[in-house]
Length: 251
Ligand code: Z5A
Image 1 (cartoon, rainbow, N blue to C red):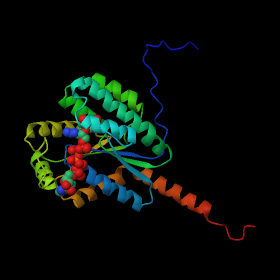
Image 2 (cartoon, rainbow, N blue to C red):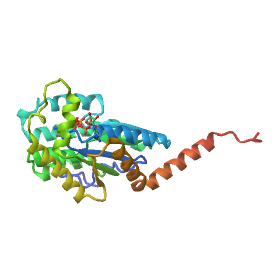
Image 3 (cartoon, rainbow, N blue to C red):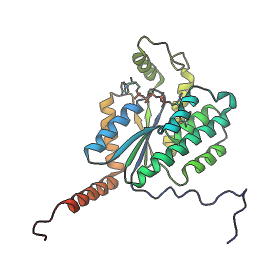
Image 4 (cartoon, rainbow, N blue to C red):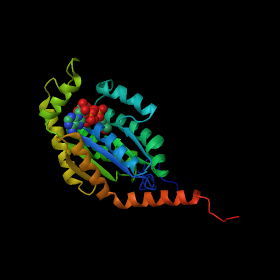
């Protein structure tokens, strides 16, 4: 068989599909309640005996968290949005290789605060990067892997702003609170569009309601959308428990 030309693009993306755990991602604007609901999902899955890890992007592993710190501090802004997008992708590759893919392969469920849709909205819509570049970076980072379910939390700017003020208390206002409402509205519209376009993977959830009401809807969504996976997981656990139970009368 001939060797591929060093400059040709791979036609076979990384085989990241082989796995048994589920990947659930949460997306939405700042302060839409993603972190709050990540914790709720974790409790829900643990209550039905599923092994679960929660994580976030950018970040999730020590090396990717180091990149997060510099990315969010704006250190790479001067390099331009393309370079920044490549660095977000690098953090994602580290996160996938060191945490997400091994966890899924071991049957552990992964719940991630922000993922690929944040790149589409922040680097694509806000920073104006070419979608083809983002397609390419997504293919390099993910291969064939995609989330099993994406919950897009939808909250109006006024509510997110009020939450940010409450959380801040006496500390100085952040960039969002400093008045960039139009930017927030664009971000919200971007996430809404993704949810509408990728309806087989994404569900738009009204995040403006009290946290427990939102959590309840999310529990129902997971049960409905991932029912067969939940049942299979429970069955596997049951079989493992049976295998460990001593058989009476066996010599
Ligand atoms: N970014 C990017 O550009 N490209 C990428 O590919 C990725 C990310 C992956 C990371 O931000 C930044 O990186 C983000 C996008 C960019 N930048 N911006 N700009 P992050 O995820 O760390 O920050 P965030 O989204 O701003 O997180 P957050 O403020 O923590 O928001 P949240 O997780 O959605 O909300 P929360 O922490 O759960 O809740 C916020 C507050 O509201 C808190 O006090 C809660 O107690 C309260 N809360 C939550 N839910 C409710 C309800 N339902 N009712 C009332 N109060 C509530």
